[in-house]
Each structure stands twice: as structure tokens, then as C-alpha cells.
Image (cartoon, rainbow, N blue to C red; front, side):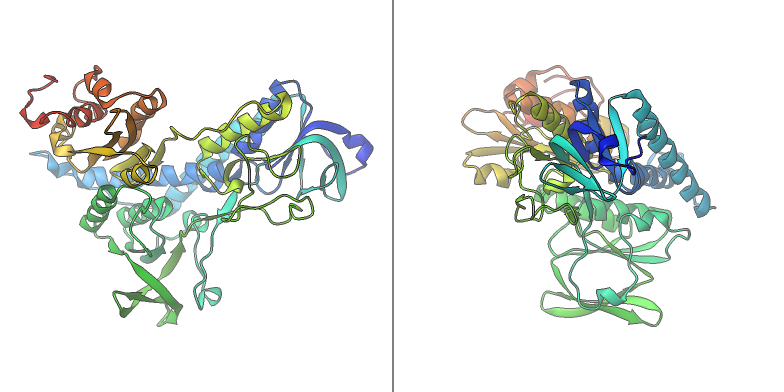
Length: 475
């Protein structure tokens, strides 16, 4: 690490200054260093950013913990078997999660810095200037700047909320005592994942959303996950408005309006999962003539350039494609463009996404609605999991696979899966879309039997035949 607290001259000049030391920031710094650049990496807050510290890593290990509980309780789906599982020490669960986070932060971030001799790491709240970046009262000069400051939990505008203690996706995973009851506002992927995790751990959960669960997913997927949640005892309330929030009888109470009727929902804890807000405050964007998009993120073009020459922005701070792997991808591309002349273009056409509920939900490409809006004449195929041999053998037929294709060319446009092992199957559809495959070609591809991914083949074959009339592997 470097200390830039003495003078500007000692800090020197850099080819690239990267603001933000999370996944995107490290990706940009490592890539630029690999191109021979002298790089200043400026972090603020905990090194490693959202994913390793308060996002992907802690949430997914907690979700797996809850899946272990559910797996034991659901063992009786196999004849002759019964099992039980319970949490006997919530504090140890949290401590194990924290230990994993600390280990990965050390190995994947802190320990990496000495490996890159031409990357200097600084800490401080950074602001863009005419010639570079300023932090801790010191200014360094840089030819190019890459902004990778990420995002933070968004806070909705609800009367009374400012007077109520609430949880975010960050603080909810730090609770030392398992909530007896919790209401969760927001039906996106974070709300769905945490709702199921807390319910399986033993909390009484109410999940509330203005629209429907996972509104960007196919309606069939949304309906399916809603039903699965209700089967597990989660109260799901959709299509509502939040009116006012307060405290009553020692509990948090929320007044909602649904179907023209008002209702009061109460719980011990309130968790907000109503989206994420790009971290743009304090960067000096207005002074630098860097424009924001309608969602509050930094506006960038296809090469990830902002409206100020020589300044790029990547990841969550742009307000789009808020997935850690897309942040890292964009950061690498921006660094290469900064060093080599802006020849590379950001492409999210075949961007896979995953929701780590159980069953898992995954998708890539266009939904049916998106494809129609884009002007395609579409055709669809929906394969219930009770037609998939793997699901039958596992005694778990929760889910479906939906494919969207161009009716004129037969080219696969999109795929969405809800299945216990759905996340590990979506990459096949990603490659099919990336390489312009037709559903006929996908249906004729050899897939291993008794796998979840074989469902993509069966769904593709369903465009032209009734797969219920095929013997095993006959297609």
C-alpha cells in the first residue's frame, strides 16, 4: 500500500486512476497494470466492495445454510426416509459467515495488491478534478480515470420511515439474534433470496411488493416462485401501495393499500430491499460536466465513456446490469479502452442472471415481452419440470423452463429456468444465444441424461413435437 499524505510530488503522475476498490475497481486496475500502465487505485470504506463484504458472499453462504435445513426437512419426499434439522446457535452461523468474508477479502483483495508492483493503493473519499483525482486533501494527476464506486441499498420514500429502525440487505446479515418476525419490502432478487433464507431459518416472514415477485422475470416464473414461497409459509402480498409506517405495541406497523382496501402489517423487524442506488455523491460529477442517466447512474456510451473526455464509469455506479461479473467485465473493457483507443464495445446481449432462491431462477437474453417489444414475431416453449427425468429421479418437480425464439428464423432469443439446479444450466443457453443457435440445433445437441440442463434440449424439442410421447433419450 502507498501513503499519499505528504505531497503531490511524492504521489506522482499516473496513467490511470481507478476510483473504487471493489470487484470492478480491482478488475480495472489489474487490467490496466497488465497493459503496462502506472495505476492509482483509490478505495473508500472496506476494501473489496459490496460483493465480498456485504453482498454475494455473505448472502449466498447464509442461503446455503438455509437450504441445508430445508433439505433435511424435505427428505420425506423419498419413501422410507425422515429427517429433521434446526439452528441451535445463530451466533455461530453469523460468525462462520463473517470468517468466510474475512478470508476471501484477505485472499482475493488485500493479498493481491503486492503482486502488482505498478498499482499503488490509496484510501480516501475521491473527487474528480480537471487534471486527475483529489482525496485526503491531496491531488494526483492521471491521464485516464475509471469510476467504479458501486451502489448502496436504496431507501424508499414512505411517510414515517425516518422515525423507524430498519434493516438493509447489509445489516440484516449482521443480526446477532434471529428475528421472530420480519416484513420485507421489495420483491426483487434480494428480497426473494432473503425472505426464503429467514423463513427457513425460523422467522415468520411477510414479503410485500408494489408489483409482483421478480417483475423482470417471465410471469410463469413469478407465479411459480410465489406459489413455492407460500407453500413454505411465507406470506406474499403483491400489487400494493405503502401508505405509512410507525410503531405500535412494540412492533413495526406498516399500513398498505391493496385492491382499494387498507391493511396493517406488523412485525418485529423491517427489511428494505427496494433496489440499489448508484454511489455518485461527492465525486464532483457536476463540476466535471459528467452527466447522470434517468436512474441516477453515471451515463456512459457503448465504450463506457462518460460525458467528460478521459473519464470512464463501470459497474453499479452506471445504474445498469448490477451484477458483480458484469461490473468486472465492464471494468476490464474500460481499462483496455483507456489504454488502447476505445475500440471495444460493451455487450450484454448474452448476459446470464441468477436468483439464488430454491428452486434457483436463472435467465439470459430476451423475455417474451421484451422480444415482442423489440419487434420479433415470437414463439415460446414451456417445459414443466415434471417432464424432466432428473426432476423425477430427485423427487422434486418444482419449476419449469421457458424458451423464447424468433418464429421466422427459429433463432433462440431468451431462456428462463426455475429449477433446483437452474443456475448451473443457464450457461448452455447463454452460449446458444451468443452463437446464434436455432432451437432446432439446440434440440439436436447431445445432452447427458438425468441432468437438469437436459431440460433445455427437451424445451427446444417442444417447439416441434410432444416430448411426453418420447422414450428416454429418444429425441
